Length: 304
Image 1 (cartoon, rainbow, N blue to C red):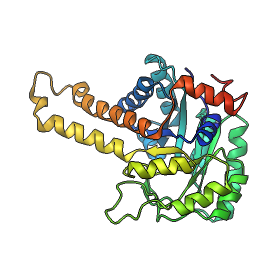
Image 2 (cartoon, one colour):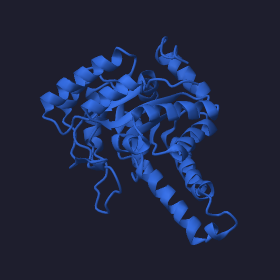
Image 3 (cartoon, helix red, strand yellow):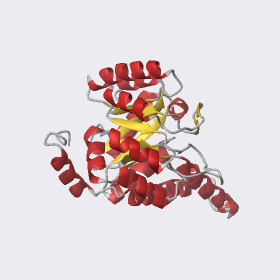
């Protein structure tokens, strides 16, 4: 199956009270693991590159081609969205030109009026090419490839203005952070999430999905979160699996130094993590998903 945009996928998720996972890739092994998990569970999925990961991998065009060719070589038949995660203005424009199916413009570090104006520009450029757009209101705590947020609760009035700018989904700050959550973390602000969900019909996005207790994620999804981002949990799973490989001296076995053997446990650990989170999010299998899409919008799955 070719890549698809995320507009109707996440609209159906909001209406159906489930979420579709957004999983970061960093190389070929991660890409194969994420896509393999989606195929194994027969569910739609979003695979995304941060600006830093894209630079490491060789650029946005290479990343898009890698995902497309991996879909082809693995005979992936489920819907896959190719997304830019936390892109600045220039990165979002480049990914639109390259042909990503979905882009996030992260203007939280700009004055609000500038964030709003540039969001409108990105929306116009993207929608002209059938590409979905994610905007962000409120700072997501922690660090994501050099973009640092102190963490805050999204302002409801600002969220309403950004939603009116035309993005297809909106990332909101509700006490969530990137990276590992500290022991004194106070949890998600469900009061603020309720205010946002009441004011905005768009699918809402939860960044920093790694490390949030399952019961909080399930409650957030029921209240309107339709896209959950996962990256740190994959990194930890990968690291632990590869460390275990060396701790058990498997590299000393015959040709145990072969990088394909070294990387295999990490790849499996990522696939297992993605499959687990798909189950958490309640993402429906493709047959049910297509029914929900059809019910949500008559034209919603013309791209299948």
